[in-house]
Image (tube, rainbow, N blue to C red; front, side):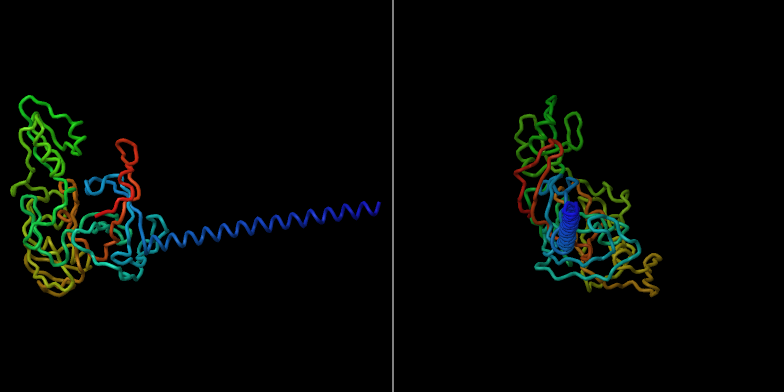
Length: 361
């Protein structure tokens, strides 16, 4: 009987030992997975903060260069990543209000060049810079550039801007009497009808498509739809910058501000500089006609503290950009659009495989 009891005791002790080993192995396995997840999260945060970002194109403002549903990799190394500006929850838009961290931009391997496609924080959002909405546009104006728009044509330092065949414009299209224009045919050509009448249409399309459309048997005339000087689209929008211009097809010459630029403020040019002084460079300004008081000092002269850029969408008549709300400060720049890693056609509910891994330029 004693022998059986010892045998039973040994078996019980072995079972307890095996159970403890099993629990220790499970804890060790759980610890390894937890460590791996923590390090993966840290690596992802570092990559997202300092190296790359993933963005989706939600609107047609950059067509036909970028399509609605394109998913992009944006390199922050190009212009230099920013160190964190706020205390926020990683991978979310949740941040601690009122807490702004001292930050700086780590040098990148390139400067912004004219016509780069740039991701930036929407300047006139009311929020800390890094949590403002992400926008993507083409940098058409560099600090110090002189810009003007005449009859829809952008002039940079007196010369017509570089042209890209992906640019989209509104065109007035007239059909021959009693001949129907097929919306399906227009879509198939890569254009979209903005406004339609009995035999007159406003159609958004590239210059190449417009040239092809002129040869359609039902078409009488195709020409760019240009707003005249008398047509006012800006005053009703409520933007400071555009309030002093007429419309996005006609804009008098102005200079893109740069760091160290000294300007003389007047009632006529205040719409150009108001957001710069008050919103981006945080001065307290009062104005009485042509008389200005800046941070308690009565003066009409001001030295710009940052570099600024002028951004426009490639779909020139379907893009709310710098023509409306003004300049982009250099501290709002996030990175350079690099590559399309995926594209989804929301109308057909199909991937656009021909766009995957396309470089952006």
